[in-house]
Amino acid sequence: MSEFSEPVADRPGTGDEGSPRGRRLRLVALLLLLVVLVVTVIRVIAAVGPPTREQLREQAGLAGKQTLYIGVKDDQPGVSQQLENGAFEGFDIEIAYMIAEDLGFDAPRVRFLAIESEDRARRQARDVDGSYVTVDLVVASYSITKQRQEQGVVFSAPYLETEQSVLTLASYEGTVTSLRDLADKRVCTLGTSTAESGLEQRVPRAYGRNRISGCIQELHDGDVDAVISDAAILAGFVGPRPPGELPPKNKLERVKKLRHWDIGDDRAERYGVNAGPNPALRDLVNLSLQESAEGPDGARWRVAFDRYLRSEQQYNNPQQVAVDRQPQPEPEDRVEVRQWPWERFALPYPHRSPPAWSSGVARARVRRSSGC
Image 1 (cartoon, rainbow, N blue to C red):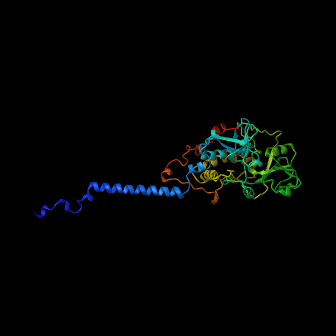
Image 2: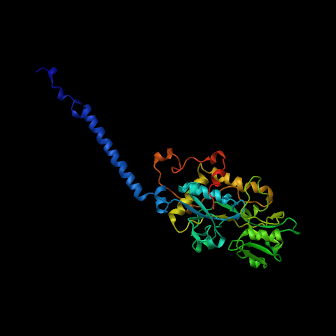
Image 3: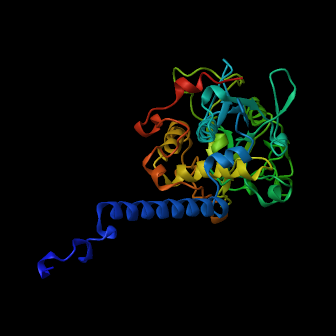
């Protein structure tokens, strides 16, 4: 055999490992290894990583739930009030709708029930038949305080910041720059509120009522000299109701022109949602507020603020109605959820369509459909 007739099989690189079949086997083995690696990583992350949004919904008892019950105020124009047709409107109502959407409930599946101040901690609201209902959430101008937290109220992150102020008749003789100016005056405030706490020492003739609208009616009637409460709550009673709006269910009588006084109170009233004892539900509420404050959906908060609170500012100067930016969540209120890389290219909120808020469209048509 000549040197030119050497067997082909003995030449380097011509064995099975260099053949198309060998390359296919190596590719299959590599793909199998990658699949095993991905499955292992996913199982590790699922075991020790943060929960998904859907897992939080299951832990919160929302999976399969048909209606979300929310306790709200019914006599605070601009913040939360009930209209004569039974629907609710106001800044708190829009925040409640925003959170409900992020929990997976569109407007027809949200039911608002009027709640009194002393019932907010227990989440007990009155139904139309007079019976008490334990609501899922309380969004009712509820200030976050250390005392309330120590008593067991589980608050979300804050969603609005305001301060305490004073209302008098526009014809009031004198000035009100601090509570000292009311030391000998008859003053009404909302019972079990932060305004009532410690007020009796500074204003001996002060007393609390169950509803702020009751205080305002007494002011119009001349039974009290002043009303003290949060600026955001009082502001809605000062200016005229926008033309074309439906009248409120709770109407005031013998209405007179009012004046809003800045008393220089540097204590911030920061409103939070009472989400009850379920930590998963609280986390979902905080996640909604967090995404609103930091994510592309923040226009929802801005539209609600502009529509109901900023529009009142012109009638309440120099008292600021509320801070015109959403409070940033504190580190302890921040929530992380597991989101796979491919989900980041989908809708940020897979349970609902992109909102119309980013285009500045208010949800009046939806708000009217959900009442009582």
